[in-house]
Image (cartoon, rainbow, N blue to C red; front, side, top):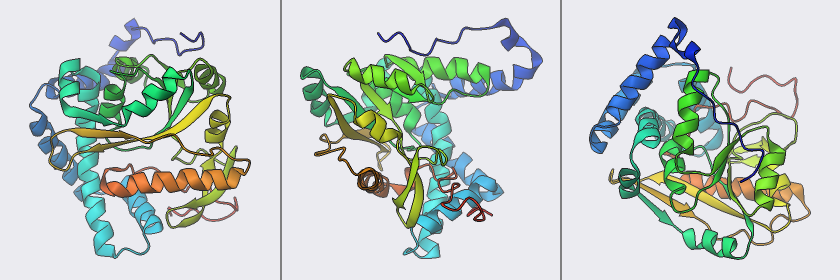
Length: 312
């Protein structure tokens, strides 16, 4: 195992201080709800999402702007339909966090079907590292837990700002996977790829101007897109694939689809390569746009730093 893995956070007596009591209350409630029947949790999640939609918030505005920017060809009615469904899925995602962190293995396996796992098998038999490009689908907690059962992964992730939540998040996400690396540990992910690990990386957010190019993403012609994908994909003996997690429309569970390795990727043209990555993300997100995390400011960084924010 790589020597640079994130150290597992220990339980601290300070977690018992009053400033963490609300966090404890939320964790206990989430844990308790996670043992309810699956479809009950989906129903509760939808109700919570509808409530959040009615209340309205800064996040609702961000999602509205993102949908308008990405799908200008849609009518306002069509975008509002996606937005409402997106909030329902956001509510469900809260309870999926409990499922992903605390469900026993047999219950997870019963709900998740993985398609295309033979591509990982083949690459690992050949001793190759695997860069699995994922996206911020709202069911990410459940699917991150599920994908590691047959093929434990190395997960590149953002540690939680709340130390107590990070204590639970780390253990929940790491139950089925090999280990996790903080989002700034570039050398750690490179080392894991060189060791022939399968590594999950999410290139679909705006990580700022540094190490980014402005290329099209849906209806936005100049979207800040990380070049980190290319740093990892260019490592020797690495294959790049997509992993697309979706919740089934009939509420039966989840389907994770792993694509065949990208051909002729990366090339020597950074811009063309990032356009290709974004096009692959677009195709994946377009399958179920209501399940994508539209609540983050995907287009906060503009080509001209003096340009006004798109979210004002």
